[in-house]
Length: 114
Length: 205
Image (cartoon, rainbow over all chains, first blue to last red; front, side, top):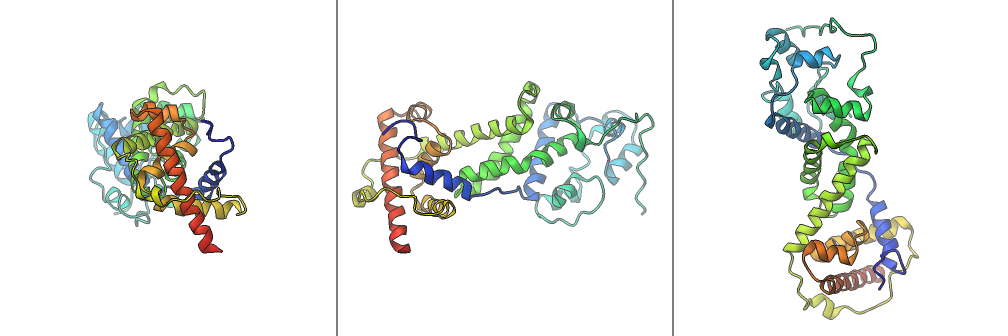
């Protein structure tokens, strides 16, 4: 048989149909939540995250807890901590596809809405 | 407690945009700065595509889909500085996902026994080749059912061959086996696939 699977091989069409038949699957919200958490952990391995003040300065919305933290702490290292680490929103979102998180600018809440 | 109102940034220029409006290269630059909102946007924009790609190629063994998706994004983070924007970020991520899927096929096939004396082969009758009298949907559905019940090594090598378009030579190189060994395994996999396919056809008739 030719090494090119497209030539004279009845399985080529069948496997192409099998790939099409699977259709598009969206990532469950809890998968996105765990993915985001894993990325933040990996980013922190090589140094602190961008400070909340700078993120805010860019015009990106902070969640209520991040914003309180930004107001309470001086610019610098303290603003680089990952507020989501101890947050119950993260814990819920990593386990539930429809986590009851409703406040604005929380990425975990956004994953559940999309 | 009332939620405090978020103040607008004092020095915000009028051209300031939301993170959702960033282009691929702008988003990458923000993620490289470790901006958490940009990182969330990266996940929001591309997790569905990467997840769908990986899931379709691992099915029916979907238990590892999440792990491979996560490996894809973590690998992307590791080489994000090399993203030049020549292709879209989506295409770039799917390229990484494709490599992760191939790594999976290779690793699982390396671990598998490639025994020749498969009892399924002994019973296999070279019947008719699968024919395309079915609609595309039905053929695809039946193929997935057959794949789900094949021994893992057969399913892996068929998917690697037909979905990833890997040649015998490439598979031999990547699994550390001879081309003859790969051809034999592929031939056995095709035979068993056709046998099961025809059995299902007989049942349906």
